[in-house]
Length: 283
Image 1: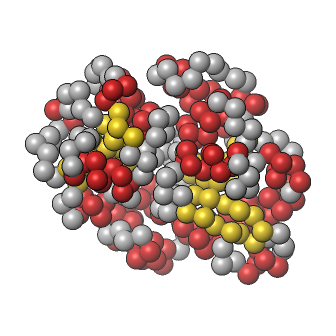
Image 2: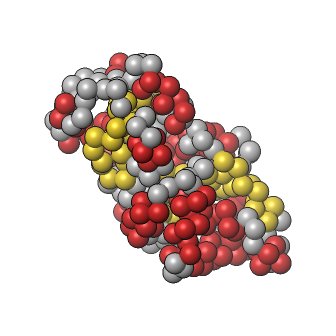
């Protein structure tokens, strides 16, 4: 059975890349068809709804918002239990070099309701700064943000710090601060019709995924491999891998969903809160 899975083309999904080559999975009747989604969680949520994907690795806050808006998909489990470390970036040509110097900036965001959108609002709230919808510029993906900062259409951009490191190292971006997400960053979402018909195969896949994640954490060779594949300096790869906790489990998922929903309500991104079992995939 072939499972269509999507995710961002970033180092977090290295375990999936190795699983696509797994002969053991194929022996057990499971084959992964992986698709990169540079546009991120919003694009994957749409693909789950449109039956273009069976499963997706998505930002926690993004899939929660999508489900609140009517997406019938469900959350299978956590994927990365540690928070996402969002780098706060400006153009290297910008005069801004400190977080406190941001005064009514234009924020580049991948899409409305995305992680880059929500984290900008969370940061402004923490710093007790007013923020208005007119300050957001939709750029769709990382390349769009690079163009927006370069041509002055946006002033600041929130994105995962290690993904943007090559652009910081090349002096295209300046990273002025970091902000961790207030919850575990990635979950695995599934289209409900696929879940209902393929419980046993999904169980085989998730078990293999957890083992692959554990093997990466326990292998000294992983640092060099990830560094080469994702064009990350070796020292940054070590920092990232040492700080990353993969957890293929639903444990504490209901508590996290409660926290995320409260944040979405607080920032006006949704008008209602639903029981947590509305979001969670059950056998």
